[in-house]
Image 1: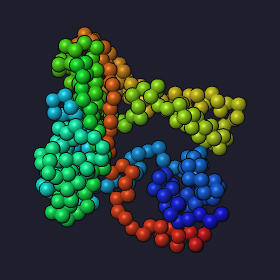
Image 2 (image 1 turned 90 degrees about the horizontal axis):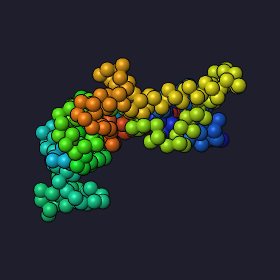
Image 3 (image 1 turned 180 degrees about the vertical axis):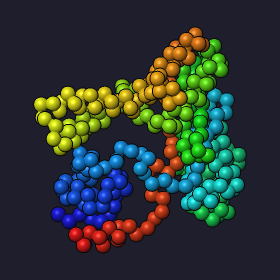
Length: 308
């Protein structure tokens, strides 16, 4: 069947595999995109699971905690130069403040601006675009509000390259104000920025994700020549490793690899006299999944495909 250059381009961006390998994968799977991603992973040609391989866009990830409410947001610009512009920084501060101080729901661009209700956030954004002369996008944001037994904390790494927001819990309300709990929140947020866990625990990773990973690992082991009767046992060990590497509580703590994050929580809990845990977290990496510069790559792919 004929495979379009655009589909090859999309698969290459998704997996970082070579162009011709992407073409082969699509041909082998009759143009089924998801099956082609798996085909490349089985062949060891894909880095689809590595978020760090994605092309980055410019802008910033910003965060703040106001009272018991935390906000983290990613706002993108076309160039790094504009990301350092005072006008852009002021816009980011206004948007983050708006999210923190507004109870409005729905599409953010349609919300009345909290500092001037005669304007919508979309109007504020258009004014900034007109002044700065570059397209700006409010890409995503998250907002947490703490309870009597929790603490919300934010951490920004690399001058806005990565932002983390975390809500940690203590079983006793009086323990929430203990400085040790805030230090724990900061340490775990820093860890999340560095290690990029998929979930807090293995129970939070969807069963279908684990099942699909098992399928891929089994096929990959067969492809590499492992004996069929040994596959199940090998995959079992690999899945344990996969979960340990991707679940926050099972990861080796980045500041002390001799401890798991769950061990750190127990240590802190012992110090403050309460059970300590992580309720939720969110991690934004600037530009993850965004194509930084638009070019006629599809035409380039098509031209090269004709030669093969």
